[in-house]
Structure formats: C-alpha cells, structure tokens
Length: 336
Ligand code: NAD
Ligand code: UD1
Image (cartoon, rainbow, N blue to C red; front, side):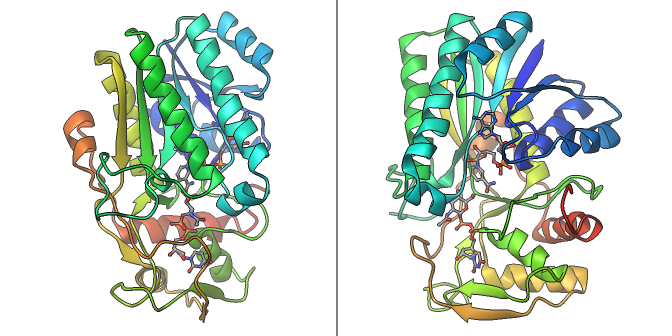
C-alpha cells in the first residue's frame, strides 16, 4: 500500500523517504519544488538504489490532489509540506495561513472524500510557546506566539476534531524539537535558500567560508553559559520516528500529539564547540543581542514517543555535527 509523502523533497521529507524506501515501504513523493530541488530525487536514488516515484503538485490546488488520490492506491499520508520560517510568517501571515492551513484543509478533505484515514503530520515544539515547565510534556498548554506556530496548532486541532467526528481516522501530530544533521552518506542534507535563519545551517556556511562569522543571539540567558538551549535531534532519528508512527497508525484509531526530541538540551556554544572538536574546523563567532521571539531554553519529555511508538533517539550531538559537516563540505552549494 502506498504512503503519500507531501513536502517529500524538503529537508526532513527527503530523509524520511530514504528511511522508508530502505525499509521496503512504498512511497509516492509529492512536492511543488518551491523550497527544494529535483536533484534530491537523484540523491535518494543514489542512497537507496530505488528510483522514487515523484509528482510535482501543490497542496493549495485541491483538484490536483483529488486527481492524485483517485489514480493511486494511497493508504496513508505523511504530511511535511509547508512553510517554516518564523520571521517570514510574522511579516506575511496570510501566505502562511493559506499554505499551512488552507493547503492542509485541502489534504484532509480529499483524504475524507477518498476514505484515506491515516495521517502523520509535521508539527513543532513551537506550539507550546513560553515554557510553564521544562521539559515540555504533550500536556503542556499550547500558546504559540507567531503565525507559523499558530498554523501548526490549528492543524493539530483540525486533526483532533476530525478524529473525534469519525472513528475511522487515525492521526498523529509529531512535535519536532530542533532537527539538524544529515544523511551519513553526505549526499542529502539541509539546503536553505539565502542566508539561513537556523543555527546549524548557519554554522556550516561559516565553516565552508560562505559566511564570515556566526552571530550568537544573546549570552545573558539563565542557562549553563548564557546562550540559548535547545533539544537538537538528528534528522535520521526524526525520520525513523515517522516510520514508527506509521506502524502505530496501522494498529490504533484516534488522534495523538507526540514529542520527538532527545530529551535534553545543548547551548549554542556547546553545539559550536562540538562542531569544532568533531570536525576540526574553527567557527568564528560574535555575541549579538537576543533575537526577538527567542526563548531561553526548552527540551522535550520524550517518554510518550517511547511508550506509544517504541522510539528513542539513537544518535548523539557528535553524530549530528559530523553529518551536517559531511553534507555541507561535500556540497558547498547544496544541491546546486
Ligand atoms: P522544507 O522547507 O525543507 O520542506 C518543505 C517542503 O514542502 C519543500 O520541499 C517545499 O517545496 C514543499 N512545499 C511547501 N509548500 C507546498 C505546497 N503547497 N505544496 C507542495 N509542496 C509544498 O522544510 P523541512 O525542514 O523539511 O520541514 C518539513 C516540515 O516540518 C514542515 O512542515 C515544517 O514546518 C516542519 N518542521 C520543521 C522543523 C525544522 O526545524 N526543520 C521543525 C519543526 C517542524
Ligand atoms: C526556530 C523557530 C521555531 C521552529 C524551528 C525549526 C524562531 C524564533 N523559532 O527555532 O519556531 O520550529 O526554528 O524551524 O525562529 N541562534 C544563534 N545564531 C543564529 C541562529 C540561531 O545564536 O544565527 C540561536 C538561537 O538564538 C537559539 C538557537 O540558536 O537559541 C537555535 O536557533 P534556531 O536554529 O533558529 O532554532 P529555534 O529558534 O529553536
């Protein structure tokens, strides 16, 4: 039975497709290529030995989706497609609601119309907002404070309501913490357009000489060394979490939100040091003011994922910095 993967040529989707193909799952890749490249398909083929089935389509076009569902035997959906830049979501909120919410409604409607009942969705720890306690459990109240986070929370609510309205549905929202790393082959990785917003791609662009130095956003937080603390998770561990979530959906009905994180945090400077030590590359940095909207520290309580999915992270911070660098150093210009 076919698993439709939306956003399949993006950073996380592509790593999931590798993992799924290597475990013999039948995946149909869908992307509009707005934020990714067709070259990802070659990389997936090189790593897995399987030529992936790919459809170029946009979730905002419901008729395209209906057509895809009517000609393919789709059994479940893993939904990665969407926009993810927090700052951009604040300056252009409607673009985010249109793509991440209206696009997702199209997908849910077509799934309902075509009796496809199983969905895994890419949510984010950003739905929790300011931590009332750390680590975040799934019961922590949701209070996102930017439009991107709102779109994730709204989609979660729609999934929960749909599952309540019809007991045939089984859906999981996976709340990712901070995915970094790359496929260990160095053939697939993160390839953001322009100057990266996120820490790890910024570090690798400094390492490769494209950017002069890293700006560290604040060194006066109440953390181990004053810099922000996050729960970094290797993208291959994250990909495996989705495989486990599909197995779970095959045997359970209803809706669940599940954290995918390592269960502990590292500071910005700890990540920089790990990168320098493992890869023997110097990362010059300067301390800058705090970035607006940043939180001091948060990490996951990942016990629900272990209990329901039988999943825990296997890879370490050293694996993450090694694989991120293997990707960037072999592909200084990303997929181009
Ligand atoms: P990405 O931008 O690399 O991948 C998203 C893919 O979706 C891209 O290939 C893009 O072309 C495609 N896409 C966007 N809109 C589309 C549409 N309307 N129709 C078809 N395709 C469309 O992002 P990613 O890092 O792989 O993230 C995947 C998902 O995980 C996103 O939903 C993101 O919000 C979520 N997420 C990511 C992170 C992270 O740190 N990367 C953290 C939490 C949650
Ligand atoms: C960001 C988003 C979050 C989203 C996640 C994954 C913001 C405010 N939050 O999380 O909603 O789910 O990406 O897409 O954008 N840092 C630096 N210098 C840099 C970049 C980052 O010091 O150049 C620091 C940040 O202050 C933070 C840490 O590194 O402490 C991680 O930042 P980042 O990788 O951007 O992720 P988040 O902010 O956690």
